[in-house]
Image 1 (spheres, rainbow, N blue to C red):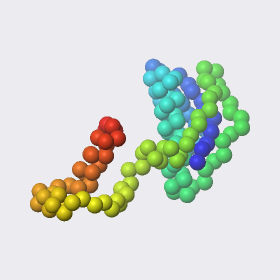
Image 2: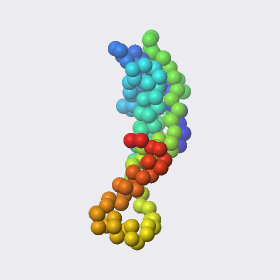
Image 3: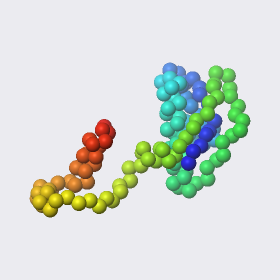
Length: 129
């Protein structure tokens, strides 16, 4: 699902805070505005993803927002499908085939098949941890 929520950036000591008033408890910080906005997108996506998964009501975005002196209004675009794909660590069962001789050798060595497959896929896909 795609969402857009209003947010407020505010200075806080030596960092920038971001609060999303429509999503209770949704706020974050960054060392500068760019980092704060990146963190805010992640926080909003995580908040909404959690609500979706728990089947909780998702508040509609406000049409108006009061901004105090020194604060800045912005919009945060969020995509929970994209966030879920990037962060969902739930295991998925895969069926695969390997030569019998390789299977025997691996079983004799007590090879951790799942771990080795994950490492191999990450190397093949150039994914670093």
